[in-house]
Amino acid sequence: MKSVVLLSGGLDSTVSLAQALRETEVSLALTFDYGQRSAAREIMAAKKIAGYYGICHQVLALSFLKDVTGTALVRENQAIPEPLVSDLDVHEQALSNAVRVWVPNRNGLFINVAAVFAEARQCGIIVTGFNREEAKTFPDNSFAFVQAANNALAYSTLNQVKVVSYTQQLDKEEIVQLGRRLKVPLEHIWSCYLGGEEMCGRCESCRRFSRALQSPGRC
Image 1 (tube, one colour):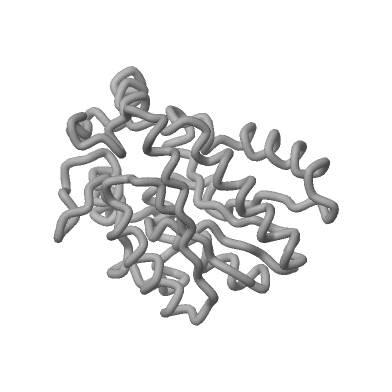
Image 2 (cartoon, helix red, strand yellow):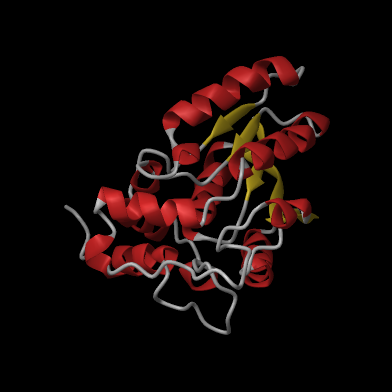
């Protein structure tokens, strides 16, 4: 089965890509620039990762998303939440932070754009980088969302493209462990909401990535 991969250059999408290369024939990796603060660094990371694996990579601009959202991922006058590590698993706090970085229908849009490329390239699968940990506060990471998307794609694509995430049942620690088993180039990953010279180490994405990297692992 051929696939199109949504590649942000972050941990989840990169590990999902690595697994997709074992499970499918990857036809294309897509990265979206929607005016997010980290766009340039995400694109750079995704290009390095695509180059590492020798796969076709394309960047698509969806600039209108920045125009219609006032959330902190795209608005520099809005503060990016900086939770303590101890707050990451406090549901009320994590939910509040999620609202502050929510972009309207982002994953829904990405999947539907990817479906256009998938059908045109005769690919039956769209690979995404969702995870169990963030699905608790981001409903568009959830299994229910993927099921709903696949129900819609069964009608909107002639070849009935399906969304698959090889990381969806895993938390961040488990994704890092899988990435290490697959020899993923973790040094190329950009997992930060900001676009500085280095990852900030303070935003939620950085905190979760750092915590997973530092975990001693499970037997």
